[in-house]
Length: 444
Image (tube, rainbow, N blue to C red):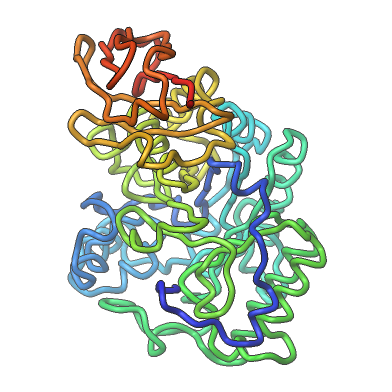
């Protein structure tokens, strides 16, 4: 992943350009992690990425999609779980147990559309190496040959197109525990435990090109890294891959997880990578602490609707997009808990989306955010929007420059606003929908 002082290799400089406006305006995408790991659907919900040392993180990994790795760490709770519940069975047994028997791509995409999300990104191949389409070179280790016996990426793509939602794909170029039979990751990810050779670089290239040619993704979302042998210019290089993508989908975007090569937007994940939240950026996280479906997650360790709304507003107010993840069950359904969260987020966006989507950050010289009480700002078309998360009856004085923001113009359907000049004073009322109340002001 890039740092702020990273210098791109010269052969990637030609990909530098203005990031397409559609992505800047989109603000919200929905991420879906789905794979054989959805059968055991087990991980310890210890907390968010970026708040633990790496050795503890990997041994107690809250990411259910990392189950293949975690069960190979001797003494880990996941290892014990695999022994006790599945008799130490081979991970690939889960491919055949994954049936997707109740999966309806249209139903999932209807839920995505109700959130107001502008783009959708499913996993096409995660670190376990199982492809959700008949990817070249995978033999029978894909969902067309085994398990669901369906082109799941194609079904997602068709459903997104029908609803006018931009379609992207996640592809794990940095890890494939099956292809290279690399060692278990118990501490740090490095060149000793990720595949870096030409054979894997060609394999990953063939996959990514096939995804581009078949599904024309508007987002190519890489993860972890790209095999080192594929980074220099040449046959089946990452340079050729980006050429192919932009020739096929000129307004496509790529993230910053292809190593020190090229990116259109930066990424953070939960609390990790927060220093990358500048320029054009995106935060990703699950409704819970896992991306893949995890049976151990419940209301105590997951975002409810109000929590998701607050997080979304915070990200957008600071100039970012949010890629919010749901993990489908092995049968192919969204859990009731995650469905409620997305539906409440959608209900909020139905009412207040005009202050979120296609918004801009508000200059802090005009109005300042605060944490106690919680206040965030966005800007659209000569208006400033304050989002205030405080109990009903709270009186909040907003920190603004009265010469540039018209206090007397303040209006809200869930708060009263006083102050003809100087700082506006907001009395928070009862809101009909979850989340912070909104107050809109005219800018001078």
